[in-house]
Amino acid sequence: MDGKSLSRSLWAFHLNTGSCNGCDIEIVAALTPRYDVERFGIKLVGTPRHADALFVTGPVTRTMEKRVKRIYNQIPDPKVVMVIGNCGSTGGVFYESYNLVGPVDRIIPVDVYVPGCPPRPEAIIQGVVKLWEKLEKKRRKR
Ligand code: SF4
Image (cartoon, rainbow, N blue to C red; front, top):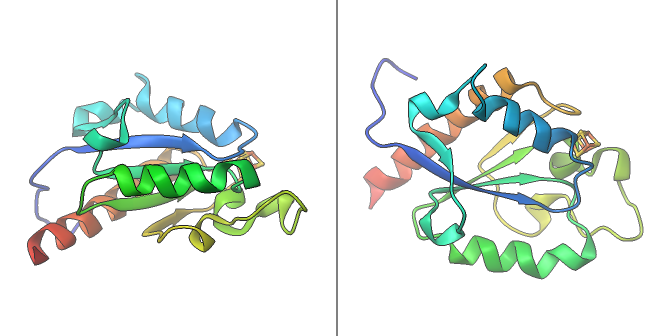
């Protein structure tokens, strides 16, 4: 984090694009009291219009393609995207499955990948720190 404090909290919208729910449960673990990322100002919001970041889990099924694009476009600029789990990053165990259009970076730009099947909450928190730094850089450029 290069020793500087981050200037604002990070609000995120979570989108499941066909995940088995394993990655989603790890996001819940990161949010709930054991890891409690809300103490750093990180919280999930109910609409992409209030978000700074998009958290994506799952490999992107055909039915989710339009929704991924629409939700990405609804997030105000500057915005950042983090893919959580192998499925969204590479297709994972569903790679080249007939009903997929993913991985996520075939549909929208991705800033941070958190590998794992599923990744642990510590890895998600590390990914959020990287994401936060990227968002701050984008804000400074404006
Ligand atoms: S990466 Fe693993 S845990 Fe996450 S959605 Fe894919 S199969 Fe499930």
